[in-house]
Image 1 (cartoon, rainbow, N blue to C red):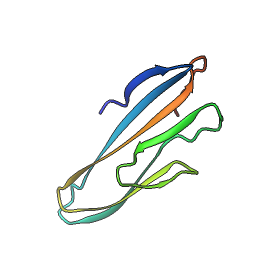
Image 2: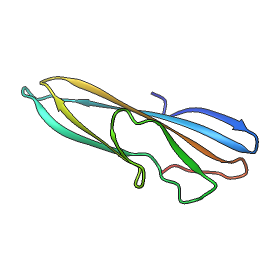
Image 3: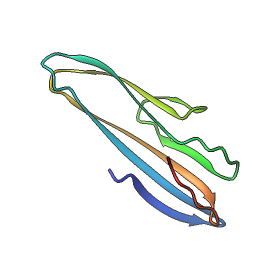
Length: 98
């Protein structure tokens, strides 16, 4: 997936939408249980809003932005995990996602 999907201006604000895909594959000859973790940014600025639009069935902690998936993968199985979020901020501000 493209990591940056759309950008649009609404009034005095800019809205950027982001989408990510994580691919996990079990290369062993036996089933495995794993935990996959990632995060959605958390804004420290009241003018910048970050809204998850799809957490991909992950456990989501809104305070830390942490996403967590518990997976049971069979031998040679591949799973794709997707999540999306939107960032709304004033047009005159520049943002960087880290």
